[in-house]
Amino acid sequence: MGAVLTLSQARRIALAAQGLAKERPTGPVTTRAVGRTFDQLQLIQIDSVNVLARSHYLPFFSRLGNYDRTMLKRLAGTNPRRMVEYWAHEASFIRPVHFQDLRLWQSRTWVGAHVLAPELRSSLEERILAVLARGRPLTARQLTEIIDHREDKAVQGWGWNWNAAKRVLEDLFEQGTISVASRTEQFERRYAMTEKVMPSSAAPAAQTGPICMPHRGAGVPVDPGSAAAGSAAGEAMLRLIEAAARAHGIGTVRCFSDYFRLPAKPAALAVRTLEAQGVLERVSVPGWEAELYRHSEAVLPRRATGRALLSPFDSLVFERRRLERLFGFHYRIEIYTPASKRRFGYYVLPFLLGERLVARVDLKADRQRGQLLVRGSYPETDAPPHTVEELAAELILMAGWLGLQDVVVEPVGSLAAELQQALQSRQRNGSGVPYVSHVD
Image (cartoon, rainbow, N blue to C red; front, side):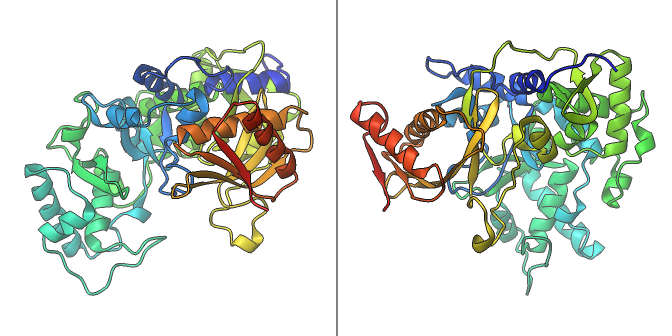
C-alpha cells in the first residue's frame, strides 16, 4: 500500500503543491512570480461574479499578497502568451501546453450550437470564420452586427439566452477553432482565430479544424478505449493527469480527474499507468479513507505557515469531498441559493491559517464608498485563539490590494464582535487601512 501519512502530513503536502504552505514574499511581487504561481497551479478558474473581485485575480492574491492585477493581462495578452482561455475545470485560464491535450477530451456541447438547424449553423459558422480570419478580435455582439444576423427570439438554453451567432461562437471556441484574445471591461470575450492567439507550439494548424472532429461535432464523448497508452488521446490524458496530480500533491483519482474535468474511467487508467511508471505512489492516510496517490515530486514541509483568504473558485477548494476529508471543512458555494436559505452568505471565502481552515467570511467590495464589507464572519468550532487577529490582518491587506479605505464589519456571525475589536485595535496602533468602522 505504500507509505502511511498522517492527516497533518497530507494537508501540508496539499498546501505546498498549491503554493499555500509558506508565508507570502515580503518584497514587491514581480510578473515572474505571478507566472511561476500560475505554472504551479496549472489553471485558474474564471467566473463573471464581481461582488469582491473577478475570481481569477483572487488566487494570486491568496498566494502572493498585494500584486498588480495588470500583470495577468500581460501574461494573457503578450506574445508568447503564458495564459490562455479554454474549458478546463470550468471556463479557465490554462497553460498553453495543455491546450491541444484538452481539445481531445473536452465535450461541452451544452454551450454550443447542437440545438441549431444544420443549415443555419453551417451558414453562421462560415460567415463568422470569414470575418475573424481577415480582421481583429471581436465580441459576439460585434460579430452579430457585422454578419447582419437577426432572429426574432434568442435560442433558449441552459443558464443563458444566447442568440444563434453566440452559440456558434461558443461551439467554435469549444472545438478550439477560435480562441479568446482578450476581454472587454464588461467581461465580454473577444474572439479571434486560434492561430492568432496561441503560441505557435500550441496552436493547431490553420487548415485542420478540431481534433477528432467526428465525435466532437456529434457531441459524443471520447471513447474511453482511446485512452490506451500510445494513442494520442491516451498520451494527452497521461499529461493532464500528471499535471493535476502535481498541482494536488496528494489525492484520489476523482481529485485528479476533476481538476481538468476529465472522464473518470480514462483518468483511472492514466493513474494506474503513472503509478507503474513511478510518477505516482500509492499512500494511505488514516482518517481519509480512500485510494490515495502522492506525486513523486510532491514536497512535505515541516510546517505550514501560510495565511490566506481563498476564493470560492480557488483550486484548493475545487473538490469538496477532498476538502472535507483533508481539512474537516464543509463548504458549499451559495451564490445560486435563495438568500433566505443561505447559511453563511453570498460570496463566502474560507480562511486558511497554517494548515487549517479556521473561519469563513462573506465579503463584498463597495467600490463607490471605498469599503470592504464583511457581511458575515464565522469561526470553525476548533479555530485557534489567534484566528481573529490573523483574519483582521488579512482583511486589511485585502482592502489595500483592492484600493479600499475601510473595512466594515457587519454584526452577522459569531466572530463579528471580536473581529471588529481586532480591527479597531489595529487602527489605534497605526497598522492597516486608515479607517475601520462597524455597521450597528
